[in-house]
Image (cartoon, rainbow, N blue to C red; front, side, top):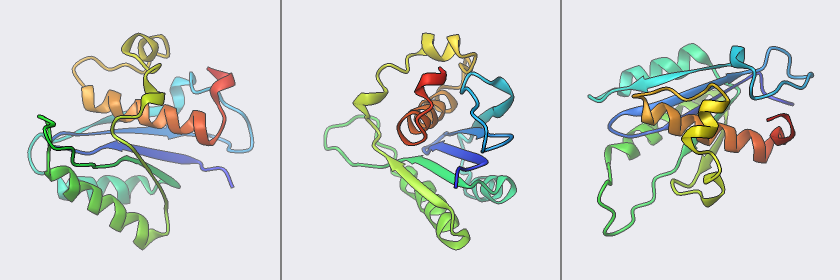
Length: 151
């Protein structure tokens, strides 16, 4: 069954999220449809409760989350990301929500540049984590639901 709503996360010190809503999952909608998109950022302070609240309020059918892979020598490692991923995993387990984990550095997302997000009217200046969550969500839609032909 196709999802009605998907939430995507870029967890970290500031966590970005993107939401894609299908008004009718039986019809085809372009990811260019701005009505279906929202998002934002949580943080930069601790936001465990806010994250749980967002998941509970939105009650997504699917969740897409950037995975955490420790890479020695990587300068921008935020260990707090594991906390937020744990909250997302717990929510999905308790609510039987489908969870898709994506690698942090996904070469296949290289085509999702800022100019492409701007062309789709999905780029938000000053919200890099939201933009990254949006990239993960678009990549997921393209790979999992085959919506690339609608771009």
